[in-house]
Structures are given as structure tokens and as C-alpha cells.
Image 1 (cartoon, one colour):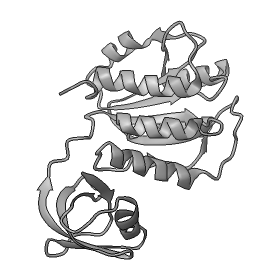
Image 2 (cartoon, rainbow, N blue to C red):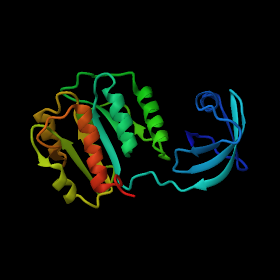
Image 3 (cartoon, helix red, strand yellow):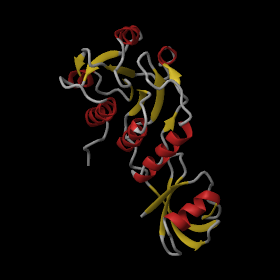
Image 4 (cartoon, one colour):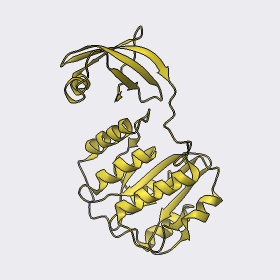
Length: 243
């Protein structure tokens, strides 16, 4: 069953899809009249539609029903990721979106080997594709690149929010940390670049109320640590593993 994100709204239970989205439906998905198309509007609404006509530049579909949006986690996760080299950042964005993360902030840290990037639009496209593939009704936001010190101060946007910074140099085991904050609906996770966070950055985060945690005795690659941190948090506090 094919899925697609659209910003256009249905009119009289019909929707006309044009431009690149129409080309994607006709040439990549190879949809034909009569095929079912699940439409997400990025506002949490999901519609089941039936394609009535297909052309390279225009697709028309009839809305059959509004469907329940069940793929979002009850916990809102913001991932602050130290920018990674090459395709590692692509992997982190893809997999953490599939796992249910809601926002991703690429962060320049003391040990970042990448300090600027022109990949923001690429990362946002990866987020959209991962959300579509995993059946999510909303595309997680990939924010502008920010410096580590700049993102700590405004991290009070949510009430009942807790923050965790992961450090291979020490910290509390993650399981008891998550047990202690069970019931929290918003959580900020900081995972580092290659080389991890510096001791100074960890102290700075602690001064802003962040809990320093460890993922265990083994030193994980940066991309593995991010995926593991989100997975464990979703299992303990969200809906990963739930029926």
C-alpha cells in the first residue's frame, strides 16, 4: 500500500496531485487507476484514497475515508545530534525517524569534525522518506545547524521535559535514569559526534539540568549510540515493542 505526504487539502472528497509528487506516484510507485493511496497531510491526518486517473504531471484521487493515525509515539523526543561525517548523519536521521523521534537538531560540538554543512535539505528529504516508509502521519522536523552552547539555554520549551546527555566517560546507567523519569512526555537526548562530547560540554549540560548517562561498558560508534539511545528510550517510555 503506497503512502505519500501532501500539503494540498481534499476538495469535495477529491484531491489533485501535481508536480514532482505526481511524477513520483506515476513513475516511481507506478500507480494505476484503482490503486489505493494513503495520504498524510503532515498535520496528523491520514486518508485512504483510490486513484482515479494517472498522468506524468497530474494524478487525481478520490478520498474514501479518514483513517486513525496510530503510528506516533506518546513520548516526544528531540534528538540533538553532534554532526557526523559522510553518510553517518543520513543513517541516524533515517533510523531515528523510523523509531519515532519527533525533532532532530544537528549540533556543532567541540570535537565535531564537520562544522558546517549544505545537507539540510537532503536531511529533511530523508526524514520525509523515513516517515512515509514507517507510516507516520507527521514528518519530523530537521532543524538548522546550531552550536552546542546555543541550544542549551532555550531547552525549556516544554513543561515536564527531561534531558539526557550520553557520554562514554561516565554517567548513570540509562535504565534507572529512565525509570526515574517515567511519565515524562517530552525528552531531549544529546548524542555526540565522532569522539564524543568533551568533559567541559558534559559539565555545561549538567549545569542546565541534564542527566549524564551511559549506554554501557562498550564504546559504541556515534551513529550506533544515537540509534540505541532512541530505541531504548522508546522501549522504556514510548511505544516500541507495544502491540
